Image (cartoon, rainbow, N blue to C red; front, top):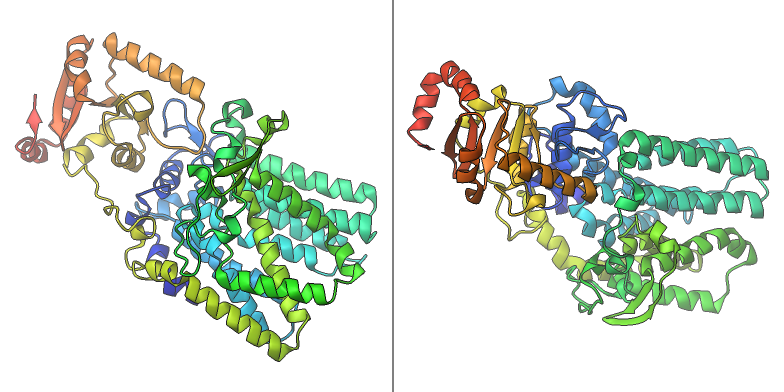
Length: 556
């Protein structure tokens, strides 16, 4: 908690503070919730119809933390108009990162000082801080929980206790992010491999039954979150190799603010997804841990216990490297296999090294603590932590300096959110319409207007909008919609329940072709048209306020 407050600040935790989420990826994570909260429940539960209308999307594909979306939606009428939970989840993730790091350290040492030092390495992880721009992917505590579950000592009387804990963890992860869920399920496979094959604490039937049931739980939760609203074949985009991990990733700060390590070249612009810098302090401790392990090899029982986890780490590393293995800006190996078409749904493959990153950190601390007396281990860990803090000081300082302006955590050079829609006409007119139609939206050509302010307006009044950003979308349906929209505008099809925001290139043709009389107004610099019949309704209702606004805007 202290680290979070000092580096990131508590201002982002305030649920009524939404300015900071209106940039980068945060904006569409918030916007998914902004629409979801106003809509009635659908089936599946995570479906959203008003955003990217008429195609729609889901709370899953806007990466809006389905867990909190489902939790807060029933209380929507009690919540303020501006309400975000992204900061609360980020704060909770840091607290839980510390909790499970402490539980991991208790498996190594009973010394509270050593536990504290070891926990700090996990809390201050550069990998976690690097994911700040994607709140759901900051749920690294679930990976630490999986690692803790694996290394805990279980006996024959506790298999169902373990199963119950796995149900809780996998259910939470399935309502957070599919990448985290898949990594955690890898820990489950390794856990049951050890539990069944090596320690014989469970039968084959029991093992496969429990693993199968956990997989079914994931499937059911993903279904209700809305992940299956799109077909897998339509999710394939950029190849795995673009967002892969570089072999130099553990040594490459990649602009992360290292004092002691220079940024190294990468093979693709997308390899930032494979950011896995360990930090100079951890690297130094890792070198010392290797020395300790060479002096006295691991006991056979420890190797046996860690074998399934080791196999998992090898597999995750290979997938993180992808089919194009790179060293710096050099491509060492490039191959294609059919399996990649299935795995390409997880196109940011570089992220899959995160469990390995934390496993390496755990083992490094383990060797230093177990192979030395508590006073020596304390000195080594303190020295490593001091070097780690010195190495990463610029990135910590950079965040700490803007903690009172959370928006700048994303990019301090970008302007703060400024809603372009200043005119009161929007609030006057919005209750009389059901749709905001951009002609065209961004995915149909040069956008008539930026989607964010109009999406915020539409969500606020329960309207639909034919634009938006999502993690995945159906390009076939998008293409068909763009074609239909173009034909409708050419044929002059307009409705009384829509506000049309037009690109200047479309304005004159729209007015000439319209099958119903329209009124076109330039509001806040945007060419906006509605039918005369609908305009008359709210013109009469709010004549006094409208008269004031007319003087500020160009009615044509």
